[in-house]
Amino acid sequence: AGTAVEHICSCRARGSLLPGRRCRRSPATHPLPTPATPAMPSPEPMDPALERSFRGHKDGVSSVSFSPTMKQLVSGGLDGTVMVWNFKMQMRAFRFVGHKAAVTSVDFAPSGSLIASGSRDQTIRLWAANVKGESVSIRAHTAPVNSVAFSGDGQQLVTTSDDKSVKAWSIPTQRFKHSFSGHTNWVRDAAFSPDGRMLLSSADDKTVRLWDARSRACSHTFFDHSDNVGCCAFSPEGNCVASGSADRSIKLWDLRTLQLLQHYDAHGDEVHRIAFHPSGSFLLSASADCTLKLWDLCEGRLFYTIHGHEASANGCAFSPAGDFFATAASDRHVMVWRTNFDRLLPAEHKGLALDADPPAVAALPSQLPPQPPQLPPPREPPASAAECSSV
Image (tube, rainbow, N blue to C red):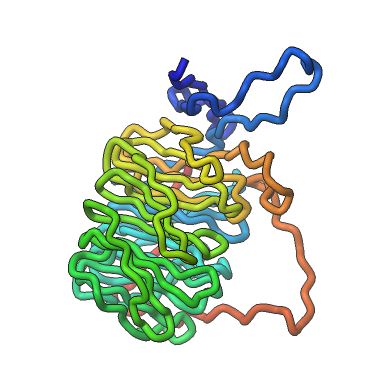
């Protein structure tokens, strides 16, 4: 009693079983069915299962992001490359080359036509998400860039850096808009709120700061962490924020009261990345202790511990519908997992199979989103794209 039960996941890559990928379910997560209803098993969630494993980076992988159409997955590597993985089996992956140092962060634009990447070479790049891999290079900071993230409407990009700054950029004009100043040490991560009205940032000064995106004023500072804060995120509804720290904890705050809502002694080492499930009911975390952990926020407890990587887990992201999540690690692997537990959630949070084509949705002319900006010819230094195989 009180001990966790390990389950061997049905881990698949191109249809083959991969040994050693384990999923540890937290104690008492799923009660046994009562003898009175033997013929009516409860709809218990299944364990997360490995669907694909990609390997193409020549060094550790720092970051992952799904395309909104679920046709592709992008990853950034310490080898200085950006990899675009295609979920259709017959399509090869593409390696985008242009950065002169490690790529620390990548993000797909909501339109699906652009990819942003940040690097230790102090630049950000905007890539066309196609085989040509054309890109625009922007000298963004005076120190390594730590994170890049698009706004919900895709019109802005926020970046953070070791130069202690948070910067917002206009995507249509590809120009600098303004800075958010206040952190006193390296800024590790930042994100726009779902409605774009607020900005959240975390830094090595042990703080998480909440900003007014329009006035650029810091509206609140959270001082609850005892060490560097490496990652932060808004909940899908925008009424809660979360952060992960080198103090090995995850914290969540209620933005209506600005009070600490939940605290988890989460990992055995630094928390590198967190991601909310689109339902807002779960949080995924990646840590230097090589594990991924899934947290049930409604119950306030650990739901699963996933032993999939053999080195530090650096990145994680849910698919737009939440039915898959991707992980990236220093073992050079990018893994895509089927959540499975999401079958208990409402239908709007269920998605497509990995190789399925997204459904066509008709829209009135007045409802059509603005066209994504067109990339001009690449600036110096030139970037190139080359094909490579996926595993």
